[in-house]
Amino acid sequence: VAGQGQEMVLTLHARQDAENPLRRTYACRLPPGMEGLLRGRLDGMDSNQILLMAAAREEPAAASDTPQENRTATIHLDPIPDDEPALSANEPMYFVLGASNGLDARFQLSFKYRIFDETSYPVRTIPALGKLYFAYTQTSLWDLAGDSKPFRDTSFRPSLFWQGQLEAASRHPWAPDYLRAGLEHESNGKDGLNSRSMNTLFLQPVWRSDFADGRTLLFSPKVYAYLDRKDNPDIADYRGYADWNLRYGNENGWVASAQLRHGSAGKNGGQIDLSWPLREALFARTGGFLHLQLFSGYGETLLDYNQRQETTLRIGFSIVR
Image (cartoon, rainbow, N blue to C red; front, top):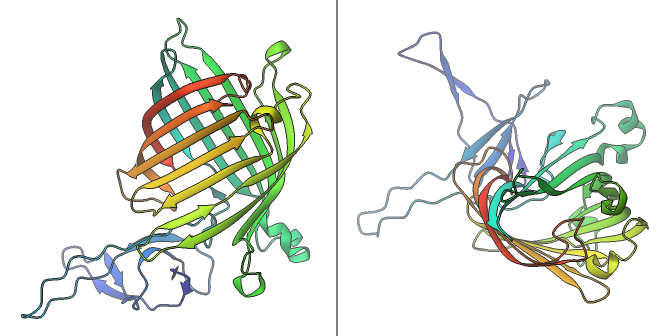
C-alpha cells in the first residue's frame, strides 16, 4: 500500500461471509498516518492497482471531554502522483456554458500517455526514457446561438515531453519540485486566411507548498520559445512567452486555478477556474465537479488570438480539474 509519502507491505486476513459462504472479505489494520487516497497492489507479483479512500476513525471522547468532530482525510494536490498509470489525466476536462454574444459552450479534452514501460528495453538502457510522454489536448468553442450551431474554433495541441519529480535531497532550496519540458504543436485545422498554427519548445517547472490547513499551492509557469508561427507571426504580442499558472485548494474540497498571459505588446488575457466535487474522487484530479470559468482579454481561441474577448462567465461540469 502506498500513500501520504509512505509505502509498506501489509498482510490481509480473510473473513468468511456468513450470508454467502462463497464470498470472502479481506481486511487489515492501517498504521497511523495512512489516510486519504491510497494505492494498493499485490506484493511480489504483477497485478493491477486499486485505489482506496482511508479516513481516520473517530475516537470515543472521555466523559469529561467535549465530543470530537469527525476528522476528514485531506488529499493534497499533486501534479505528478506516485505510481501514475501509463494513461492519465493531463489538463482539465470540462464542458461549460455561457453567454458571449449569444449562448455558447466551451469544452476541453486532454490526456497523456507514458510511452515506455519501466521494464522495457529502452528504459533499462536509458532510464530517463521512462518519463517520456505523449499528450493531446483539444479545446473547442461551440456557437449554440447560430443557425447551424457551428464550432467557432477548435485548438489541437499534441505534445511530446519529459516530466519528473526532482529529489528533495539533491536540489537547491529554490529549485522546483517537478519539471516538464518538451515540444508542442498547436493549430486550429483550418486553411487559408483562417489558418492558425505554431510550434513551440517549452519548459514548465512546478513549485509546491503544502499548508497546515490541508491546502496546497502550485505555481507552474510554462515558458516557451516559438519555432514556427508563420500563420500568426505577431502572436507573441498577445500571448507573450509564458503562461503564468497558479492552483490552490485540496482534492476533497474546492480548487481554484488561474492562468495569465502577458503579451509583449501589452495585450493580456486571463482565465480563472473554480471547481467543487459533486461525488467521491475516482482517481487523483478525476471525478465529478461543478465547474465555473471566467475569461477576459485576448486569446480565448487561436483563430481570434488578436481580438479582445469581453469578460465571460461560464458554468458547467468537469471530470478532471
